[in-house]
Amino acid sequence: MSGEGRVHVTVGDVAREAGVSVATAARALGDYGSVSAKSRARVEQAAASLGYSPNMVARSMITGSTKTIGVIVADIENQFFQRVLRGITHITSERGYDLVLANTDESLDRERRALRVMTSRRVDGIILSPTEVADTQEIRAVAESGVPIVLIDRRLRGVNVDSVGIRNRGATYDATTRLISLGHKHIAVITGGTAESAPVLKNATVATLRRLSATTLGTRTAGYREALEAAGLAYQSDFVAANGFRQEDARAATVAFFALPDPPTAIIAFDSLLSLGVLQGLRDVGARSPDDVSLIGFDDAPWAEVVDPPLTVIGQPTLEIGVQAATLLLDRLAGRGRAHVHHRLETTLIERGSVGLPRLNGVRTSPRAGQ
Image (tube, rainbow, N blue to C red):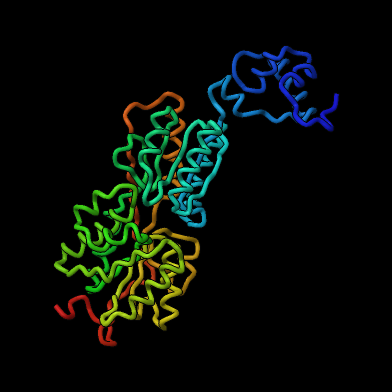
């Protein structure tokens, strides 16, 4: 019997070709229940011969599983999410799961649509990087419907699910403190925030920033602010850029910094795309790192070591974030795990050539100058 010309091959077709009952064919194709090795081999041979493609939704109604995991990320172009995905697939492929991927571009509407698509396809679980203004009510509803969710990068208050990320506040605190130790007093940050978050990122107290839901930007900005306060340095809202997540946004922010009467002597960019934008902005204004301004970026992207000078970065364990997120989700699907957990992994400040002593009035100073 040939599958050529058939519009859709059913389990019944495979059963007839293999000479077994429909129930036996379904168990073999769905990988559940008891099937003899001989019958399984006949069914698999018949399925291959006919070009059978399983209906995953129908399969889930029988087995309770589609063996698929939904992954929703904020920006697939970002090196951070690419590495996290590598870690996720390392675990899911070993456990026999496929991925359904969605990209939100930090759009709340796209996030909501992605969640609905994932649930309509009956994915077994979801790994989600929430948008900056995430719909906590919808995410909570999905979790309460019985679809387990693991959050990556960002944690949501009021949503009882697992999460995996880094010590964001500590990362920026350490980076800012390092710059201060070199004598920098005018340190700017490019957060990647948008019009919705900019007023809070620029003007909120440290306590408020630490409590922000659905964003790493608040906690990273809090760490920066805390380091300034610990050193007795003034906080300047003009030194907090929150005008978009794109490379060109960081480029424009950098140019704007250098238009200030007293530009920053150091900049911290909150992800690798923003770091590239800063480098472009420095080129636009004829400045260079670290001669005119020191630069620290987040994420140890492959290009960070080959730019001139090599970029100092806050290295994140991105692969491990993906591995832990996938492991948490699959363990929960397997019935393991009780209380929800929130893993916060350590970062590493990788010092290269883009950080140096501050240059004031055209002269490179020592850390004690001006004190």
